[in-house]
Length: 265
Image (cartoon, rainbow, N blue to C red):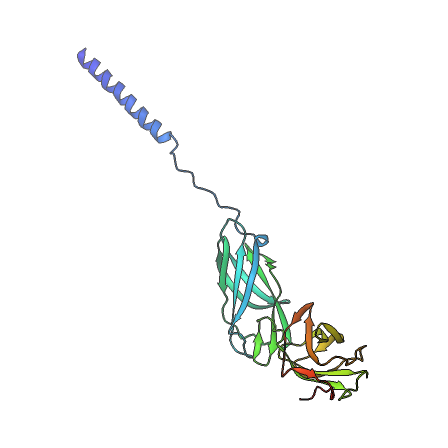
């Protein structure tokens, strides 16, 4: 009888033990939740802040490399491919680029792209998950041809230099109408400008919206309502480019004294 009781207790304990094991196996295992992937980068969040070439200037057929600073305005990072284009032609490309939030400097592989026109303006496209779109540009990024090669440096306005200032006639008779001739040298890029000649604060000659090419050019000012009357007259020449007055250096001071009334040295 006691043996049967012991056997029953053992069987009962075994049933409880195997039941607990089965419950443990069937219970779902708890795991720390892993954050799912974010939305990733979007073309609308990207902007090209800067685009440069190296070397700058670059000669025709010389190898060069583009460098770009691209701002990622989102809080997400991601990988993409970038393409620099001139119209519909791809100039350079960079694959599997990682963009983090904020500004990213990207160096593109070297290329010996041959320029054939006088000016090129570039765009940048991004490929995210096989969807390609153009990126917003902070400004126009163009390369232009100079005597030193192709450059993306901004065009230099001026400096301007007055090489000569004459009167017609010369010498001037008191009370006689006078016309001015100014030889102006432009050491920068060609521009359109307004020119004026002043005697102190009085404008004695003016030309509006004239072409100012590189190098030295003679400009003839129309006869003004102006006469030599005071003890002396000293003249200055001014250049106004896009409503911005520019400093003009003179070879000497251009003054006319009584008796002779001439601007000759």
